[in-house]
Length: 252
Image (cartoon, rainbow, N blue to C red; front, top):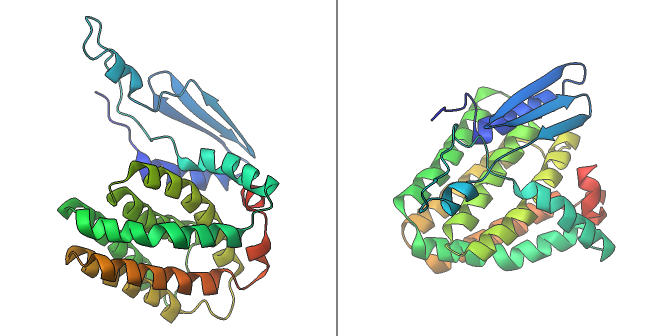
C-alpha cells in the first residue's frame, strides 16, 4: 500500500497554507483516483475516496476491495458545520448560543473520559500540550499563529469528546467544535491587550490539570474543572461583537 507524503493534520495544514497563496496553482493527489486542485479562492475536488466503506462492504466476498493507497485524511466535521451553521442562523443562533450548548454537553464528556480513559487517550492529550508549550517557547513575546493555536486547542477538545466513549456526543461535539475553532481563529487574529503570554500559559496549565484529573480517574473533579475552564474561556472569547455574530458568517 502506498503511504501519502502528508496525511491527516499535516495534509490539512498544507492545504491551509496553500489557501493563503492566491497566485499559485496547487494540486494534491488524494490516492486512488482522487485529486484536490486549488487556485486563488476556488477548490475543485475530483473523485475523493476518503472512507474505507468499500473495503468493509466487500471484505467477506470473493472480490475484496483493496486500497491502492492509504487514506490521506478523514472527512472533516467542518463540512457538516457549515450546514449546521446555516440551520442555526435560520433559528437566530449566535456564537453565544453555541458556547452555552457546549458548556452543557462538554464537561460531562470530561467526566466520562476520566472513567473510561486509556493510556492512549492520556498520551494524545499530553502530545497536544507539548506542542502548545513548544509554540509558546518558540517566540518571545509570544504572538500565536491563529491557525496553529486554534488547531491545537481544537484538537484537545476533540480528544475529550472522542475519549468519552459516546460516538453521538463525539460527532455532535465535533461539529460545534469546528465552529468554535473558527471563531477562536478570528478572535486571535484581532488581538487585544488581554492576549498576553500569561493568558496562553494559563490555557496550557488548565489543560495539564485536566490531564492529571483524568489520569487519576477523578471523574467529578474533571467535570468540575472543565466546566470552570470553559466558563473562563467564554469570558475571554465572548466579550466583543463576535458573540452576537451569526455562526454561518464565520465561514465566509
